[in-house]
Length: 150
Ligand SMILES: *[C@@H]1O[C@H](CO)[C@@H](O)[C@H](O)[C@H]1NC(C)=O
Ligand SMILES: *[C@@H]1O[C@H](CO)[C@@H](O)[C@H](O)[C@H]1NC(C)=O
Ligand SMILES: *[C@@H]1O[C@H](CO)[C@@H](O)[C@H](O)[C@H]1NC(C)=O
Ligand SMILES: *[C@@H]1O[C@H](CO)[C@@H](O)[C@H](O)[C@H]1NC(C)=O
Image (cartoon, rainbow, N blue to C red):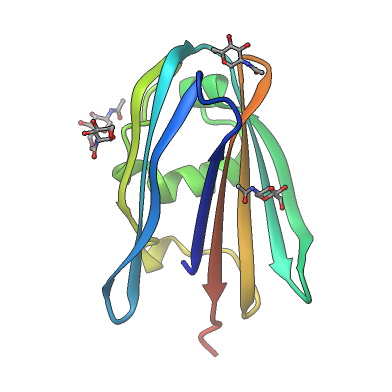
């Protein structure tokens, strides 16, 4: 990971307490995230989009929208499944709706055995736009580097 940005667009609905990367060793950067949801979330749409840096970030290959509440009852979207599989052991967001209170991702890093996407070497951004109760309320954007092992 090389950058992590979060922004709440409605602080009476969700407050981002922290959103940061931490280098824990020479070759591992982990992600910490803590946000407080103030009113129960009963509908959550997540727009996932991958960008690739080529003189600015350009939309790249993957774009999908997932119904988070439905997904957590029965996984159905292959791209969401891939992302969720990577993060699930680091988060308390591992249940279905409603969501309320502190939403945590603690010390997340990608286990090498879970990297199965054939991305060429480069800088990418995974942008997640969170639409709660029908309103775009939160962004979490993660920038990461991929170096192909040739
Ligand atoms: C996240 O990325 C999207 C897509 O590029 C952008 O529209 C949005 O402003 C970014 N949000 C933050 C908080 O950086
Ligand atoms: C912000 O969130 C509150 C609580 O969920 C909601 O009542 C309000 O309509 C939201 N405001 C906007 C501008 O989305
Ligand atoms: C998350 O942030 C809240 C508000 O600052 C704090 O009370 C809580 O202890 C934090 N949770 C974790 C696991 O760090
Ligand atoms: C969610 O994660 C916690 C902590 O890792 C675990 O104790 C709990 O069983 C998990 N819940 C589900 C539904 O997987």
